[in-house]
Image (cartoon, rainbow, N blue to C red; front, side):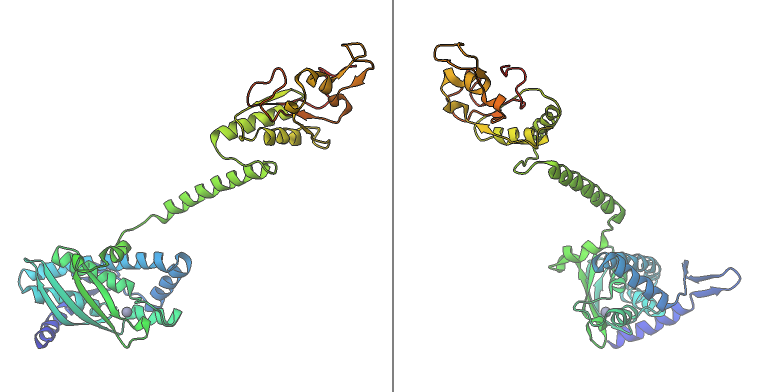
Length: 359
Ligand SMILES: [Zn+2]
């Protein structure tokens, strides 16, 4: 502990000497990196707007990656110093820069590292966390740690410094109501939930996601629109159904006779009803006739009528069911079919039966 503090003091003094305010050019430099002196409140306002517009998860990802980028930059300075000092002394550059930049007072409590062996462990105390204080100011006590930019910084800095992925997690956070924040850092493979933590480091194109969602909405609206146009009891989305239904709509606009074919249960009668509802005669009755229940030799006369003397027993002329307006769409429903209808066929004839009705 004593050693860590003495190392911290020496690096801190050295780092302060590397900050240059260049009034003539309007630039601030830390080593070779241009820096900005910004209002914490303005930064907090931006953070709040990110959360309010994108939601906690997306904002967390953006802020984590922003911190990560800053950490990687600061590690460049640390690595140059590592050439003239021990790994521990060089590593202290990060916590000291984090403090110097006004983000948080970072005090390493325990650091064990070996860059060549790749081993790393750190416990760091964070006091006066900028992010934790403002999150609490805007949103009150949170159920999870909230110093996302700072965690991103620690991960970016240490990963770049060590040359391998090091992940940090806050075990205490002022945003959760603790007095200070406290972080633990270990190599990624030593965390059980490394994948969960690392998903915040992967940028995702929100624009692409919005375009995808917009495309899905258009497709869904189109699908819902088509479904709305289907008559009651008619439902289907397969290409075959769509093709048959489009054909049906075309036929409904004319007086053409329609023969519907298909296996039992595919919905021939439902389609016949739809044809009727879409036709100009939709206001008139729809009558389903079980042609198979009518004796074969009587189907024609039953449907289209008979003239007196047309056959033995035809003593008077009488109109057929179509002519009388009682039946509109004869539909066979059993295996006993009238002449001309094969297995699984349904006939739907335009009402009025102009072509076959007796005069
Ligand atoms: Zn925190």
